[in-house]
Image (cartoon, rainbow, N blue to C red):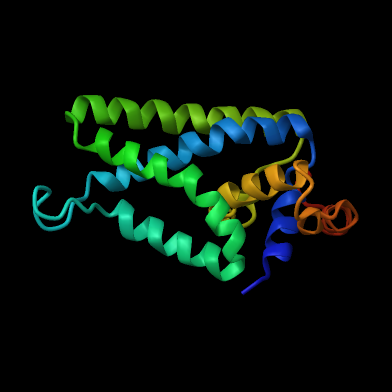
Length: 173
């Protein structure tokens, strides 16, 4: 498994323009919410007895992955995705018309916002080369916010990101 630094630098090679990064602060939560909502339609046992959907084990698996990369950053990131899980679970329990509409709007809008950012930057999304990069998006936003606050800048060393982007042709059309 790659280290957190390697994961963030790889993901960062696709996200160097601040405007693209900004779009991700809106798009990534929307897509995350929509994925939780989709998985929220698949419920285990009886919803009244054990209100657990497929979103819960999925979220826990991703959280374990984050903890394996860096415990503190995973804990810092937790309050940003846990409310998305709770909100998606609530919406998933509403009428199918409402929950499907919410899913569709969040999913499509989230991707449009991010793709606009990538068009501005002139780079394809990271998941175009590795679909598993989709799991790094929420973590990358947390690391970016920490770096802006003066913490853990080592995870996004500009020289390493630039070298990776330039040497591999990452993100070129």
